Length: 419
Image 1: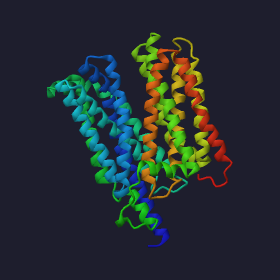
Image 2: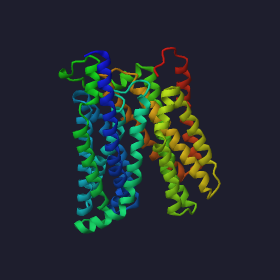
Image 3: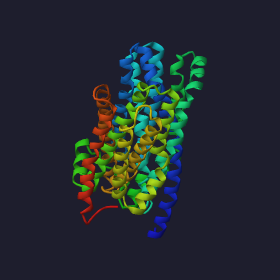
Image 4: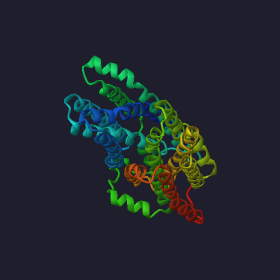
C-alpha cells in the first residue's frame, strides 16, 4: 500500500471513529448524568444521614480515577475498543448494584455500585483520546473537541430523566429514587454496543499498523510508575499533565461548592440550576471551537488562555456580592471555558508528546492523577467554605494557576515544542 492510499484509508477510518465515539459519548453522558443526579439522594435515603450522602460523589469521582488505570492497560494490549467496552460494562454493573443496594437498604452495596458507576465517567474521558489516534496534527485537537462536545447532549438530558425514572422505579417495584439508574444501565449498555460494533478497525491498532508496529505481538503493559516516568521525561507531556490536573481541581472545587454557597444566600433551586447549566455549557458546548483554536494557534497557547479564563472565573465568582446570581453565572461559565481549554489542548498535547506504545498508559495515568487531585480539591473545598468562606475558596483556587503559568513560560522557551 502506498503512503497516499494509507493516508486515505486512515482518514476514512478517522471520520468513522469520531462519529462512533460521539454517538457513544451521548449515551455515556446520559448514563453519567442520570446516575449522578440521584446518587447522593439514594445514599442519603439508604443511610439516613446527610453527612454520609456526601460519600456518593466521592465514590463516583474516585471510581472514575481508579478505573482509568486498568482500562489504559487493556488498551495498551488489545486496543481502544475492548478498553472502552469494558468501562461501559462496568458502569452497567455499577448501576445495577446501586439499584440493588437501594432495594435492600445496603449502604455499602450502594457505595460499591457508585464506585463502579464512576467507570462510566472514566470511559467518557478516555474516549477523547481515541479520537486522536488517527487524526492528523492539523486536526487533532478538533477531533478531540468534537468528541468532548458530544457529551453535552447526554449530561443535559440525563438529569432530566429523574422524573420519568421515578415512574419507571414504581413500575418495576424498586425505590423511586433508584429508578433513573435503570436509564443509566440502559444508556451505558447501548454505549458499549455502539463501541463494540462500530469502532472497527480499532483506531489505536490501526495507528500502530500505519507506524509499522507489529500489532500481533501486542503492546506493552506499563505500570503506573512507568507511565509517570514517561511523562516526566517529556517536558510537553509534563506541562499537559499539570495543566489537566490543576484546571480540573480548580473547576471541581469551585463548581461543587457554588450551589451550597448560593443556597446559603437564599437562591432558589431553579436559579442554582441555571447557574450550573451555564457552567456545563462552558465545559462542553464550545469544545470544537477550543479544538480549532488549539490546532490554529497551538496547544500551549490555548492552555495559557485557559489559565486566564480560570483566573477571571474565580475573580468574578469570588468577589460577587450577595445574591449576585448573574455574576455567579458569568463566573461559572468562565470556569467551564477555562477547564475546556485545559482539557482539550492539554489532552492533545499529552497524546502527541509520547509514542504510540506508551500512549494509552500515559493517558490512563494522567486521567487517574486528574481525577484523584480533583477529588481531593472537592473535599478540601467543603472545609474552606465552612470556615473562611466562598471568596477564600476562589482565591485559593486561583493560586493553582501559578504552577501551570510557570511551566508554560518555560516550555515556550523550548525550541522543540510539540504542537
